[in-house]
Image (tube, rainbow, N blue to C red; front, side, top):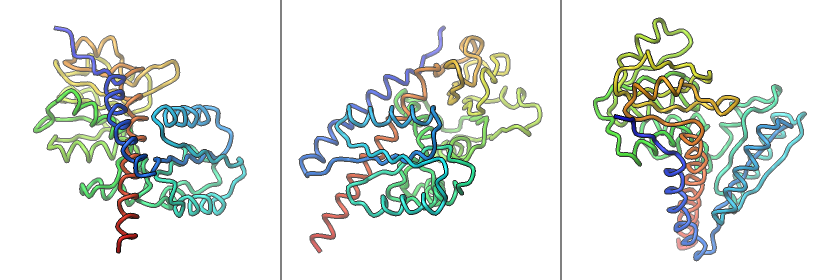
Amino acid sequence: MDPLILDGRKVAQSVKNQLKLQIAELKQQDVTPKLATILVGNDEASKTYVQMKANTCHKLGMESERVFLPEETTTEELLSVIHQLNHDDTVHGILLQHPVPSQINERLAFDSIALEKDVDGVTSHGFGENTFQLGAYPCCTPAAILQVIDFYNLDLEGKHAVVIGRSPILGKPVSMMLLNRNATITVCHSKTENLPDVVKHADVVVAAVGQPKFVKGEWLKEGAIILDAGYNPGNIGDVEYETCYNKSSAITPVPGGIGPVTISMLLKHTVEAAMKQSNNLAMKLNM
């Protein structure tokens, strides 16, 4: 029996359809959700990502503010820009495009984003809140993985999930999010010994290692669910799709899997932030 193809484009469209209704509601209250994106330097891939996000915002009826800073920008200058956006009531979400130039203290910059505007889930505070399920916005790729799981009603409870990768914006947060869904988690990384043997026991595999075709079909338990969060040059994921397809019960393609959902989750968080911030402002005005 062929595996279920977990179609991220379909999932992303369902999210966007819901967002259109929420945006229309907000506009009736004279609120238009706005995402501010900061790009430091001249990285061409980053420019493309920023443009893609702006285009998607406009298609949904949201506003997009793009802040371009020169390559030689200092940490202090970047913090000043973030501070201004934190205090701009028309801005509901702030995204600092990664990577930033080497002279900038990236962690300090991320952590200076106001928690209520951290729609990309990059602050240390936000990571802690998500771990304890306290309501901050999660990182967008882990959120996209959970959105795909929910869309297709995949049962995680009691399942053994192996996450390959431990980055602070993907491997670590998705591990906590899966744990909070009552899965049993093993986190693997570059120092893990006998990785294929570990993967062999997984009911669910999250590939987030950043290496093309890294996970092989022969590593998999029959019927495993494969969630490929990798995106490498040439539109290639972190799993060897052809061999993993034959062993899996469900699998995300690349492209068209987790990627499209990631952008939709960024916009979902921004719209939710606009709703919360407008409600808080209304409460203050009525006090």
